Image (tube, rainbow, N blue to C red; front, side):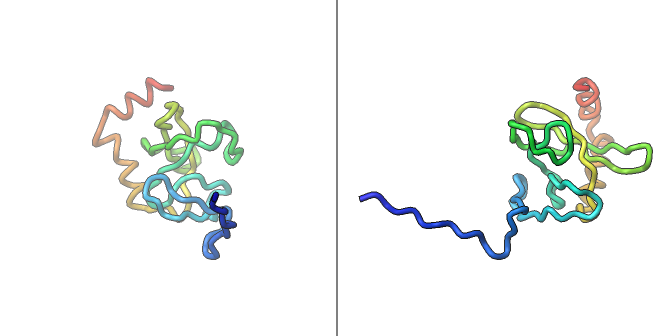
Length: 126
């Protein structure tokens, strides 16, 4: 006799907009100070390849894991996280949020000084 499936109820403490981080597995809220479209974890800065061209469009079919490569700074002084998709290799820039882990952001900003092959690899990809 086949088993009946039980109806799934969403957990009360998790909103439908929240997501689980692919890196550290923490539950991440979509509410972020400084950005309207959060798509990275504030703790480990890992992301998923969900946007195609426009931030927040969620139109990408890849859905691969995106690892933070380094940082970039806009002319107006805003810091951006450079992510590389581990599935398709695409690079993207995401603005940092106000609740991102400051130590993780600083560690990522200093990464090219520690490993110079990262910067040359990113330049060759562009």
